[in-house]
Length: 505
Image 1 (tube, rainbow, N blue to C red):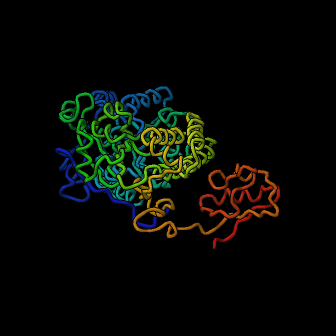
Image 2: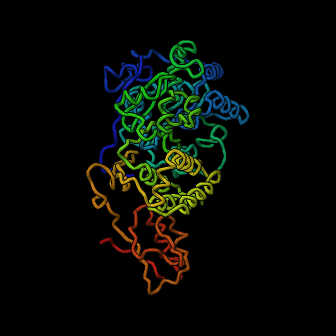
Image 3: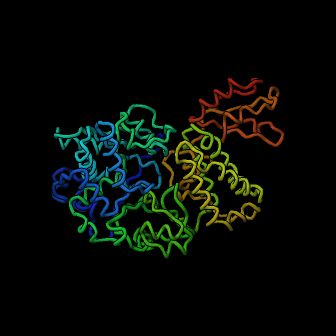
């Protein structure tokens, strides 16, 4: 996605002595010398020592799913022995969530710590390669600079690949395919990367923060690592608050303390875990602490560490509709639940928000259920989780909007979207909807030719909808550039030759 403005740069804060962010109070970028001064040399444990360490500290993936790192490491080692092959290590630095910047901060300011963890794991496995997948050019430059500082070292080779900036790029098979030179899209195959990943080899794939935490734990040992945080969840956690602040905090700290530190409050509710996460009502957010167990008990998830409070001044229904449309637009377009189900869900929510009545709300819930556990990747499930949580936490707001009694508050765009995104520019700052970047082309319906076959609606979900009579609802539709290929297909396949593409204006 092209950005109209520079990519956001995170501000950093810590609660208590920093670990992963150690040394960044004295320098803006941790070069090799500063890194070694702050952290010391990396040890070289074997695979079982490393797995035992990860097990002792309960290290889980910090990218969303929270899978136990020790189990993943042992699965790769077992696949290696069974196949008699080498292995690979992949660092997922894609961070496709607009509300998440913690991994960006680590790779942008302290890349050597991440590389330490990845190379340590690779050396323990006897892997041939460490590959870092990123989506921001400035992050790619930072990692390349760190790799150049290390020079030609013995052991696995390490490299970085710049991938397309999409929400689904971070899905494991999409990341591996992209690094391997293919399309950075989910494969749709339920094959674990620990069995077959980069180049078909057993691959240890984990998130940026996970490898940084591993590097810190290897130096501190299990006892030293557990000196801060909860006994059941030792150590620190990296959070992104309100889409701009990156905070390293020990587990167990009250969530409201973190919000206060970043100059915000629970507001109307707090989205935790990112755009595939869950909403917490204000009272639950005030009672929660920064821990996987506490957030789960409140109905939330730690996920990718995103904490997004919703201000009192914005319309929660409009924010949810806006974000659901963006999630639908991030589809890989490879399966029905994504290509058809998510746009349909977004349309139903929008209809409810515009006074569509209980019928529209019921339709949204039905379409939400229809996409769950049916997708080729986790995107439909995560998006449905976001919507289900919003419908529960903002139930009164949705009911009022559906009945035509909206809150009259504007949609401020409190949930971050990438700069330059059409949905972002329509609501950001003081700009009005008319100042948002408009598509350069339109899709036109010639009513003198249209016979209501309906094929166009199947080919263009989310762009073209049929009315009750079976004919398109509109004759003129702005055509986003990303949908031009599908629109051309619809034009060619229209049995009545009633569609055409024309310049906007």
